[in-house]
Image (cartoon, rainbow, N blue to C red; front, side):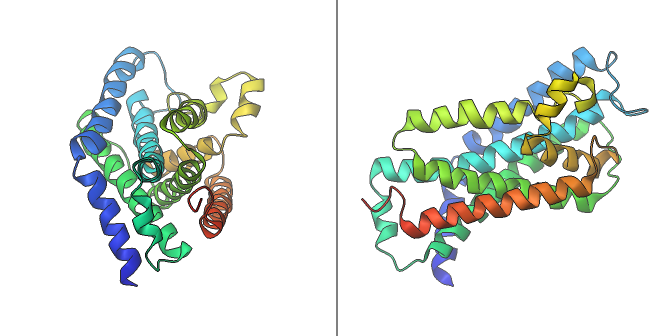
Length: 251
């Protein structure tokens, strides 16, 4: 049991040692989004009856930060270890694929939740959120971070150089995040784009997370929970399988 805990501790220290870059910078980015979009749209947009636009925006920004940083942690750790050659030292240990998976997954969840908490604490100065269902906040925050951590493991194993990792993040993660309803309600879109948005798992993570704060959502939180939970199990199974076979790390 101490093996995976040691790797987990190492991964947490890896991002915490440069917290100014890995924690403070994403918090500042989310704050800038809030100041710009909140200032421009506060008096022009009301997504839900009686809910100010700033209240609508903050949960989306928090969840967006959680997702992006959970993915960045596991993916960057693996690709850096592969490129620098120090992954061999972990391969020499008797750690099982489960040990690897738990360490990378939990450390990435930790980073995502730490950044999300930082964004929430900073943005609370601008709004008094109602906290309608706190349990939903914890559930979707944990599942969302876990899903993106598993995706990060897959991306880190697949990528062989940094530009491949950058392409994965820029052409997959970023578009799916920004097109998930962070800045708008699904019902404000044309019918075609509503249909497309329903195919985006990131939408269900953010919509369910927002429901925990506002008590309003575009779809049922139970539907979101089923889809996000199923996606998390599926992607985690793929990541664990790739670790078992040593995909692109044993050759």
